[in-house]
Structures are given as structure tokens and as C-alpha cells.
Amino acid sequence: MLSTGPELRLMRLLSCLTLALLFQASDAKRDLKSGFDRTAKQNFGGGNTAWEERKLSKYETSEIRLVEILEGLCESSSFECNRMVEEHEEHFETWWFRRKTKHPDLHRWFCIEMIKVCCPKGTFGPDCNACVGGSERPCHGNGRCDGDGTRGGNGKCSCVHGYNGEFCLDCIDGYYNEVRNDTFSLCTECHSSCKTCTGPTSQDCDECKEGWEEDDQKTCVDVNECSKDPSPCKEDQYCLNTEGSYSCNACDKVCSGCTGAGPDKCQACASGYQDTEDTCTDIDECSEAVCTKENQECVNTKGSYVCICSSGYEEHDGECVQMPQERWVRQNEKPTSRESRKQQHESVYLGYY
Ligand SMILES: *[C@@H]1O[C@H](CO)[C@@H](O)[C@H](O)[C@H]1NC(C)=O
Ligand SMILES: [Ca+2]
Image (tube, rainbow, N blue to C red; front, side):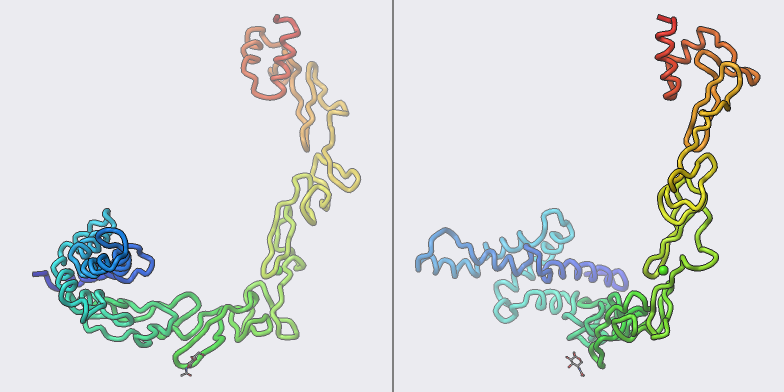
């Protein structure tokens, strides 16, 4: 009835996944078991008389209840699940009316024994062989067995984080065996200063992690990279030591070299700035006559200054000459800077209105 080879295996795996979801998902409200529990609380009517109890026991095994269970089995949107239930409806009926008492575990009877798509927990492959580490605790509880619970897979372990090796009993670098025997292993993270270790503290390191070094008590301690000469940071940066590392941060722009953040941690002031009360402040170049041309004004900026032509004048061949009136008006209609906005206000007062 079905094709053979890899295609069949894929199909089996697929339906097994679906079934695993259906029957094993402990939190699925709609799995068969909870459908059983849910409908067990209902009956044909209400009340709880002896007469109702008799009816209830009839309902207990009735087809109506089976239909209710089957209908509640899949999310209505899950095409694959609904198709699967439909396809095997006869099996479900057989089980419900004739096998339920002898084989109360529907998953086992249907998926493992009837359609041979699943394997019991902790086993895998066509013959349901035990996973690495045994079917009781596959991968010794520290990993996932490939194909666990299905007719597929190879039974090998993929270990959870911290564990390593074919049996998931070894620890990865940065973890150590807090407990270990032939069947049990607990790997715990090393102290942050260790690359490898045999215990929890910075004294238990086999090897220090980068950024840490062994002191004379065989303890891994932080390397102070900032005390090194030459400094690991660039000239316009200051160095900040941290546990296991360090960082380089930009100096304030008023500084030329610095020992920390802010304008008061400068080693020297950047050009255009001067030392005033141990902090670097802007020099107002405009307080001296630096813009000397006719109709020129000085504008002080942070760290510098600019010479601009006065309002109503424009630069022409290095000189400030009077602007033609129309152009001046047009230019002032779309102010682009604070300065030109200022000019616009002036133009309003100075003769255009
Ligand atoms: C291994 O250790 C675990 C946990 O400590 C213990 O339950 C188990 O009996 C031990 N097995 C052997 C073979 O010693
Ligand atoms: Ca450091």
C-alpha cells in the first residue's frame, strides 16, 4: 500500500512526529488522553442520579464519546493531523471497542504495534534498539538520542551545553565534573577566570582564560592591560580596565590625550581650547581682531572661529562686496542656519518692509 525505501521512512518519521505530538505532548490540551479526561466529566444530560450514573457508564464506552475525542484531537488548522486521524479512523474504532481494556495505552498499541511508526521511549530505529546510554536514561540524561521514540535515527547522542563525548559524560572546556561515575555526570561551569578547571573557584584553574594571569598563589587574577607600556589604546583614547578585559574610549573632543572621560581629564587641551581651572574650554578668538577685512564679521565656534561677510555682503574674489538686492531677498526666504535666520530678521527691519 505504501512506497518503500527512503520515502517510506520519511513518511513514517513525519507521522511519528505528528503522533508524538498527539499522544505524548504533556501540555497539549487536545491530546487523546486529556480528551478522554475531558469527556469523562460530561454525560448525555445533567444531574447525577443513579439513573444518570448508568447512562454515564454507557457514555463511557459510546461511539459518541469516541467521535468527540477524535474531533478534538487535532487543531482544525492542522491538515496533516486531521488527515492522519481520518486515515486511521478504523484503527481507532477497533481500539475503542475491542482493544482498549487489554491495551489501555493507545500510543503504544496504535503507533508502536499497529502501524509500526514509533518506538518506545529511549529506543530508536527499525528494530527499536536502545539509545546510547540505555533506554532508561538515553545519553545518560545529558543529551538527545537521535531518533528517540521513532523507527528512524542512529541512536547517537547530541549532548546538551556543557557536555561532550559519545556518552555525554565528559565536560567541555570551561566546565568541570562536579560528580561523575560510569553512568552519571554533572558538569558545572568553571570560574570566569579559568579556561579549564577542576573546581569552582579561581584557584582551581588548570589554565587561565585570556585576560587573566596566574599570580604567585596559583590563582588566576585580572590582567591590568591599562598599566602596560605602551598603552593598548590610541592617543585620543583613554583605557578602562575591566575584570578579564579592558576597553578603549574616546577622549572628550576638547582634549589632546586624556586619562578619563570629560573635559577635566585632559592631559593637554586640543587646539582652539585653553586650560581654565583644570578644564579645557573654548578660546573666543573673536575677542581679538582676527577678521580684518572690510565688511567682515567674526563668528566664534567650538574650538575655532570663522570670518564671514556681514549681512547684505557676499564673498567675491576674497573680498566682501555688496549683494544685489533681489538675490539677497531670495536667499533670505529659505534660511539654512541660525546666522541666516538672524540675517532675515535684520532684513525685515532694515528696509525691505
Ligand atoms: C553514580 O552516581 C549517581 C548519582 O550520584 C548514583 O545515583 C548512581 O548510583 C551511581 N552509579 C554507580 C554505578 O556508582
Ligand atoms: Ca583587565
